[in-house]
Image (cartoon, rainbow, N blue to C red; front, side, top):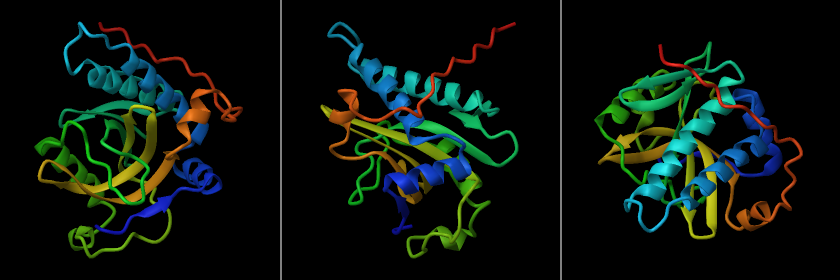
Length: 215
């Protein structure tokens, strides 16, 4: 699918997030901060992949922490770590990508996507569209999309940090082949203001991780 519906203005982003996910942009920005902080914990003596591993762990942890306080459930499907809406066929997974929130580039997963992800995404997205509607000539579905498998995509390239919450159309050649809808959370040039604390995050809330003890 070549053409994705993009929400990139702050007023439209907040409205879209509230409509389907019940969270705010500022709350998702808190997750981005946790990811950036976790990456910074990697030191020279760590394995080469440490920064990426820390980002994945803390990204997944904080996505779940935020949404589980709103009644969502921890879930895993085909080795994909997810959080699942309690009523709708709606899931979210954390994903580190090469470049997020760019109208000129569709994010690519840093680690690639395997056969499990391909099956899971196709199964979820085919509940929204017929298979022929997911080809490259299709256009986005009219109206809000309130189900499907979504990805909270974060890219960190030095001081250029960006993020988006997006609905992939599928997997091809080991990576995302396109997106149906993209909600930009942190765009180019915004991170410095957020990092310095001049970003207005008055609507952000602290959330406690949900701890499940193994029996």
